[in-house]
Image (cartoon, rainbow, N blue to C red; front, side, top):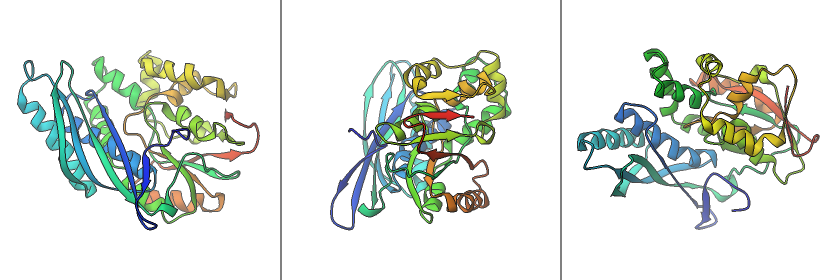
Length: 304
């Protein structure tokens, strides 16, 4: 618990360790099928972030059966099942309960060799930080709730959130990766902060290289910033130093809570370029080197 890793790992033998995680949330898109896809991808992401491969899952459902058509639940579960099938994961059961607010997610079990586990706290000085998905989904989802996002933006961002981190995890396994985490509710800066707490290292980010959903900047400028962004800034803002030229809207995006975000990978400097090239060649087109791990200032994130 003191490492705040993305999932729990239990060694079974010298060759096999079991990874366990759980995640569920309320709908963030109107389409129930796509909500199921996104929730399933989000839940499995923690296993990928540890370097593992998810194998089984159990549904977690809270549903207002008296107020909502059961057909909606069927679509949600079908979306989740299709995403599990895509990931090669077997649904082995689940649990449901009646609730006034709809919720869906998964409890996921995966496996990994004990010597290949990736944690948050094993960054090395000189490592490059690679991000695999663009930021801004929290702001986009706020625009969706406000009825201000275009159908094209909704479709593009929905597919982005539903995309598995499977291929990114597979590709990074071929490189000298020291640490990894997935970017979700604490935002990019919040999750990077977890990687350097109580570690004699810092992180320097190049704001110009960080991939961002273009419309997120527009919507942030309209004030469509979720409350979670401000909560994240209050929680971890004391660890972050922004250069004067870093735009305030971009600062909001860096704290923006993500849903089913990408992986932040700490990779040995000499392999970073090849890792990004391989990610892009295999369809992860937004992958980019966004910064590096430094010795000073210790325990801080500097955004230039």
